[in-house]
Length: 57
Image 1 (tube, rainbow, N blue to C red):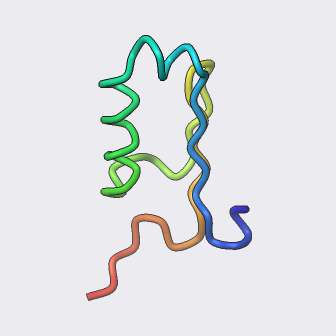
Image 2 (tube, one colour):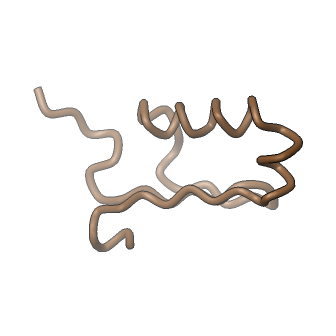
């Protein structure tokens, strides 16, 4: 997916059910390019596509 310019953001189902506000904030941060390009923790995995965080002025 990343090779096709898709960023991938993965959560555990339990996080979505129990920590909805935090999950939504993380999704918003990804949309606004506020996340690091690669995050791998027990609770979250994010792999950015090429061009993530770059701005076209």
